Length: 306
Image (tube, rainbow, N blue to C red; front, side, top):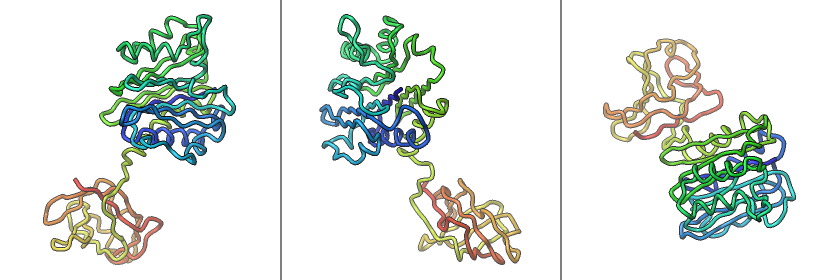
């Protein structure tokens, strides 16, 4: 019925929306409707975006408040359309404290007027760690129809489901903790449910630091290939730094016609006998007598500095 995402990272709002967009493109079910996104900006102000319909695409078309693009603490909750107002009830937050999201109905108040997500936020304000806050709230009310994700100002994340929700067979959950990205995802009623949370996290990782990002590019066609080297490498001209040749131990590149990958991901880029880079983007090349004459698809090698 919902998905909740929490992120602590540079450009967290962009990462969260990219993750949600990927889920909407691949998944089916309770998705593509309302979104409530809350953030704590770099000046410690509360920021938000919301829509009742249209999902990630609708939020991407809204004018963002100042500071949201630089916010490093962001949560969102999304599902189908037309949820009860105010939508901020699904993503409570307090500047200087943290933010809470989740899935199912963490906003529903009990007989005492208290909602699970608000209780978790109150514990964060008292200095309780997110993981402990989530576990404590859900243990106190195991029959609440709620899963929670809590994010504090230190970037720590806690996630969990009540006993009632944990018994479902359509759940997804994932948490990632790295030096530059902390992220938690919970969802239900979005299919295929086994891949949704990993997809969301992988999408955010890829947007933050794509492993095919290349700082330099060069055209493959015309490059000579020397087949007498002990290893594959792109050799740059000592003076200009422009690609001079490809070296490889494979003699097939010297035949009348041969095709494949003359350079592979991870191969060294060498200038003045020093390894200055590594290949990130390969080219499918067609060589004639030791020179690349054409490519199939990608025309540019890409490499990054080391």
